[in-house]
Image (tube, rainbow, N blue to C red; front, top):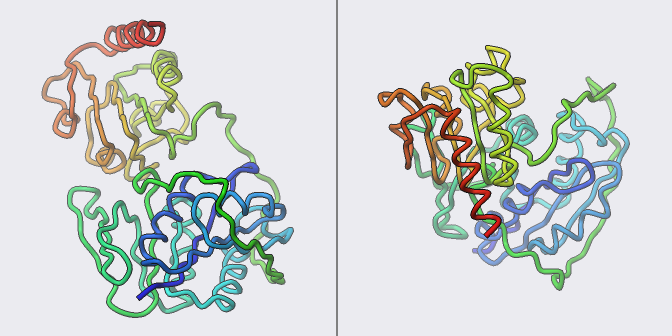
Length: 324
């Protein structure tokens, strides 16, 4: 049976995050040929709606309000419930992002629904769809099927490929007026760390450093390598605790979870908490002086050596390939 699926899109600094398009692709699979309805919240998101259509949404609903300019669970919760009451979908898809992880349990509780979170793959489609998600800090996977009632899932970024962008796709874009009131908290100011380049959580290539980097300056060759590969720099908690870098770069159980196409771990021993945040990367390259380092157990390729010798060699060889 075909389903109506509502997808919450996420915008950042005037552009849609890639996970929004991945969520649409997941919704297409879940719908079994049914309707995929994109949803966007903010104070100026009308211009982004067509992009969701170009990536596969059949139509898009926008809710614009000054209280939705910045995310709050109260504001977005009220807006989403208004959309839900209007659409009465069979399924809901969010990204498993900071926003999705905060908002999805709130919505699921209000709807008295189950929640299948952190989905990394979908087998089958429509009513036969089964959802694969990691458990026990990524040491095992479970396959889950929704038996009855509303289907509600969140998908991990960088795991489900978006549909191809097609500017010829057309779909209705409508607006819904929602009176967002009685907020228990409001965002007075947003202070962001000044970062350049690729967003770590959506990067296709991640170069991560651990305590073996030895200093803040030790991250400079890692940044150079990441820039050369069009990727982002990350870190283990040990490197963050040692003040080599900011905690916004932390990857692991208490940091960001990343699943890039290529993960280069430099000077990282491989604590289980760190590997919970990166072990599902498609290709893992480990560089460590200790041949017994735990990181080699999950690595596809291991280099036993001094990262301050290996990284410059990698940079040199990659530059030769790029020039040729």
